[in-house]
Length: 610
Image (cartoon, rainbow, N blue to C red; front, top):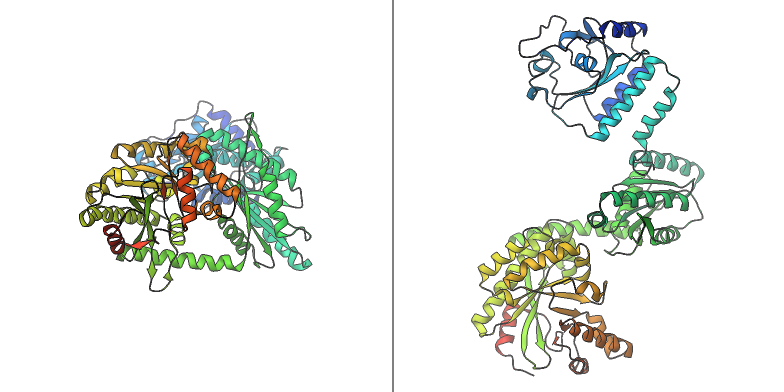
């Protein structure tokens, strides 16, 4: 290695003007050519592990060589100074990061780049002697190009400070070591234990619990709509909210409970108390998170999905215990308010069922196994048939009849939702176009649109293409959206809906009354109708209060110039009540159950106004 001569394509590092003082400071350390020492090796090993690089070095730059006090990933102990990258760090006395040496004209011709160890990435932080002169570096080397983020650079500087402290034998070495260890085990934003430390502490807690026959509870929760919060209020406000949540959790759940940040907007608790039930822990967390948080002089309400698991009942090791808590967390229904679920074996069975349904659903879409049924929609005042709602139907050879809600919910968690939504929309438009050909009737068709489908960037193009292919007029298509999908990101929802309006497409709010039920947000949305959930209609005959609610909904909707569709109409009395309060359209078994496409075409052909 000492015989390398620098080629013309690169220049050695310039000689520092303070070279004499620098060498004096280096010699004063009395460390050159000494044996390897654990106090340095632990930092190079830690650097290699933390940054996942093959080589980490403590390099000291002598008069004619660079010598490695500690080296991970190479057997070399020294190289010629003229080809040393660390020499550039020492000469400039500043950090040097080379993301790709082969693309950097300063270093592309260096023998250490062209030949072994074939350096592509290099990051070096200067190390100083007792007199403050740069004597060497702590450096990272990789055989692949890479980028060093700012927080990684800060961590490397902390490590270099520890190595420098070892060189100088400063009294603050213990304090600096604690800081670097804290960076490895504690979350920088909240100062809570991070995922790594949480896992270690849970392993230790389970060992003690096994010996002492104790119970351990694990709770993990995920904030609802946190990405939407960041979009609305900004990343800084999101960080402030996470810090506020961390502070409240540590106050509400003091030691021996361990509170940590699992990842992103997920927090984890390890609870040692034997007298606290899983239900009680879930309820305490709901109350804790339910109180408003002050962020930038604003009082903000947030919700969370909480999952709880228990040792030894639910799992015998930390991995399974955490996974079961996560499984329970994900089993919570989408909502804005906080809720909790406890792990049960049924959730595991549900997970197995979920993946089975997902696998079969992919196949069903590919082979055209899915069908649609159509339920008539009738104008109450005139008795005219005005359209139908398209409803998914799926009979699988292995699974049997799969409920539409299960198929949709399964698809919604993956990209299959786009395939499913596109299939339903295309099929519904094609069928509605055929009704006019077969029956001479121009009818509307209502198609449900999930949140994921609403927010897909190419939605407008997709709808336009399907309308063009099917020949259906845009005015005959009504897209039905749930309240929860709209408030998830109302600005984007309005943008998508406004972009579709030039096509003639109209929008309906489905199952109104079961979600947010706020007329305030309706004024922001370009919707033309509300669909009152069937539960209200079924209660009308039995409850005066339900009748008042439905009557009030219809009145308020009409004030907003919205038509109202009543779902679940089954009796003449319900229809008469709806006619009395001025409801516009009715849908339900009183007229017809959902019909296969062919039967619905016959139904349309034979329809006579009631």
